[in-house]
Length: 183
Image (cartoon, rainbow, N blue to C red):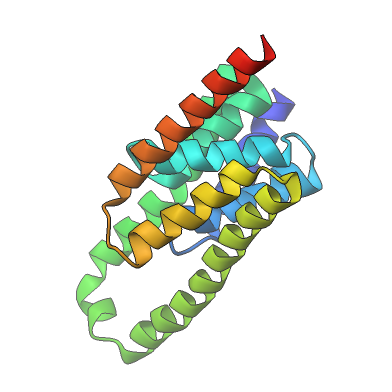
């Protein structure tokens, strides 16, 4: 019970102080559950990030489901999700109540622009961490796949869904070939 309460408080805290979307919360979750508490390995967190991003729904909630399940089973999953969704619900409720005041306030607009720069830095940190983990693991196929996925979306404007399915197909084929070669 104590473990579940701590997980709830951790997710509530993380969700309360992360602005800018799912990648921000994923990077904070990595620092908390991988680097500090060592409840999850870095490889698991990379997998969780990929699954959370490619699954329907909010990345933050998807990541909370995976991290909560890994840390404390099914009850941990439920507790992590509740802890993750409470802060946005409260914040959005307050903002919607005072929308007219917030929408025209210059200071609020400037604050949000400043926060956007910080969010961009955190997202870049997550992207670099994921890339460096792949380079460190020396998995050439993953490195090539990362570069090709970036080029496909950035330079050629290919739909992200197509890239995700193509990457999944490459992952499946790689594992099938690896098992056939090792068997």
